[in-house]
Length: 384
Image (cartoon, rainbow, N blue to C red; front, side, top):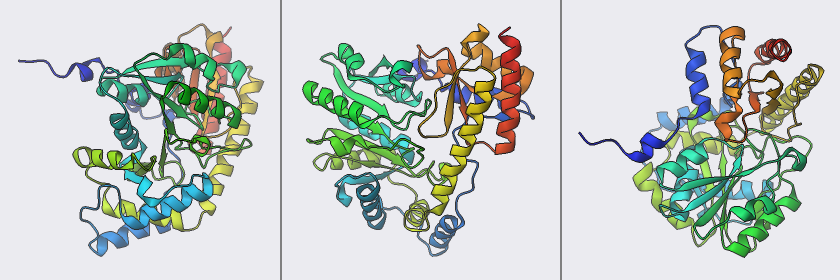
């Protein structure tokens, strides 16, 4: 019998899911490995989906999404992200991950290279592998506040390089890329005629540092931006994301929808519309909660002498556990088995990140702070 696809055989599983599987075999583990808000989806959002289903709005929709949602999204990105777009440039996708996959299909041929940060969300490399692309990593350095720098990317650019993948606010570091650094990255992409794929799913979860969408600095239409409802509105399971594409290229992203997903399910699109056009106070409340958790976690880690960098956004803390002398995978396994706390090893986010672990602030606060006590106690014991 023939073997299955080499792309599948050679693709590593997400380290996040591996930790989840390991921890789920036990009943008493506190889960800090998933980036999933502990808040419920707002009631009016659920009501909109239920009403849509009750009224029979359960059929196929246009590949790019229902017109009223695309129109509302165009207003959102104009007002909040300062991108001058038309509804025709907005494509509703099955979560942000489908938007990333579709966009990569449009921009690359098998054998091309994409440049990703180290550390970065594992799915970027997984998508590249499935599409026959080579993912090359460039480092994020503490002395640069974990911002991507053009001078570290440029030496990696070859004739096969097609896309630079950015993520701001960042998973796993929480970094919000500053306007100056973004401008340098745009200049670099223009010089080498490279696309930029900007993952901005945490765009509404920022703290002190302002968030800039890199597409707002793009003079010639080489940036594709991916957003999501998952984090902003606690809608992870609804699977609604969207891509904002340059006007001349949006149709190609729409074209990929039919063979991949056809369309996002109709009631979920009505839920997304209600989230976008309804009360926005829940967004501010969740963001304030994450900020409060961040400050308490950082204070506790600092007291335990665990090095961290203050995140600007998203809901993660990137903690240095190298003093324990263990690999981050070893640290994570031991933390689960002995202390019943699940975090994600830095090795899951890139080959040069095996000194840190990622803690999610999106867990229930009582569980989060209990887990924090267990982590700091274990770190102190294992570092001596």
